[in-house]
Amino acid sequence: MVSPMLGRCVEGRPVGVVIWRPTCNGGVPAGRKDQCSHTTLFFQRECVCIHVGQAGIQMGTTMWELFCIEHGIAPDGTMLKPPSASNSKSADSAQTFFKLTEDKMIPRMVMVDLEPSILDSVRGSKYKALYHPDQLISGREDACSNFARGHDTVGKEILPISFDSLKKVVENCDSLQGFIMFHSCGGGTGSGFGTLLMESIVNEYPKKSRLEYVVYPAPQVSSSVVEPYNSVLSVHNTLATDYSDCTFMIDNEALYDICQRKLCIERPPYSTLNRMLAQVVSSITASLRFNGMLNVDLAEYQVNLVPFPRLHFPMTGIAPIITQAKVFHEQLSVHDITSECFDNTNQLVKCDLKRGKFIACCLLYRGDIVSNDIKQAITSIKSRKNVQFVEWCPTGFKVGINYQPPSKFPLDEMAKVQRAVCMLANTTAIVEPWERLGKKFDLMFNKKAFIHWYLTEGMEEEQFIESRSNFEMLQLDYIEVQKEMHPLLGQAVSEI
Image (cartoon, rainbow, N blue to C red; front, side, top):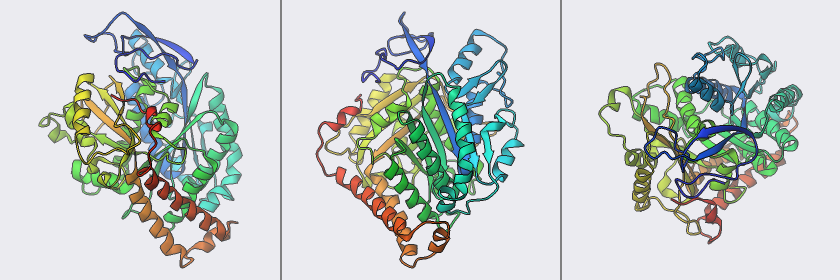
């Protein structure tokens, strides 16, 4: 468990690969003024990433590129610097997500798509030598934006080879802590096959943590007319099989708005959106990869963000988001970036935070951070009337601090900054985008539009009715917790 107090050594971690790190009372790295002579254990526990479908693979390739930049790894997997003490530490810290062989680092991941074009581009990319060929799995038929094809027909044909590849990656882990899946729920492969693969993971590794980064349909940005069907079916299967401990939601329209407002890019390409998502994933996983004041593992995200198993859909926000031209004219203090993180324009889901109440909130800081500045910033946030928690949860914030500053992509529009914060918030405001999605589902289903695409793949109309009912119940669950009194549940959130 993470210590609820800043500056206290964290003990009681699960047994894993042990890496000794010189730290102080709170894990403060050597060289800082508040360093002491204490030494703590930093246990390296591996995470395996799964990238499914076009969205998941494109998010993945960008994420691995950023991880390579942060850990000093070349595009072919070799370490950029010659062997040294500092380089050895970099290699050690990377082993949560990379397997270290004699001469290179190999990502602990599997990429799967039902058709070959996206993975063919990966095989021919600058980072083609980074990935193990057996971990890039492509089929011959597309899912055609059809959940049923990904889950019931075409997906089942490629499941055995995909799961065998995943098991080989797991076998190379000494102390696996869990899985992280990246996919969209609007496409056929991401929604259907992503669900199918996660169901197999639950059966084979029931005690391991399972997190998701999911791209949901946006209000105005859509790639397929049947996205509402696929999304509702995907969410229903998530709830019915309980295969995800925590699902971080993202939508493309929110990313487009951020790029237009913050980065002054009128028509941002997907590469820009994926680089921003990679920065979010990097911030969330920084404490898994680098030593810091408060280190966490995958299970602690569920402990601190999910009060009930069904309510496991937190939103994410990130700050600062600033261009190269503006960065030298802004102060970007801890107070400033914390306040900015609670702004609707910095959220990765299109909704109004003021319309809901917070159930739980994590603030993950990285870079040049002082804990007293965080306390002052959070005190200021608590005084705001528009930041309200449900009555049965104390207004506590789970705080993570990591001294590794954010890295920057070459030629990226986002400026390099000395400090950043990522907010993970489980809030009842998430009902707003779900209501929009439900209305789009109803508009089509009431006219039985496109239903025959799914029925010809073996699905039944009753499955749509059941999925829509469960999706509606999820919204009501979020609305209900806003009213009820549960005085004991808030103890899962560490207060600062």
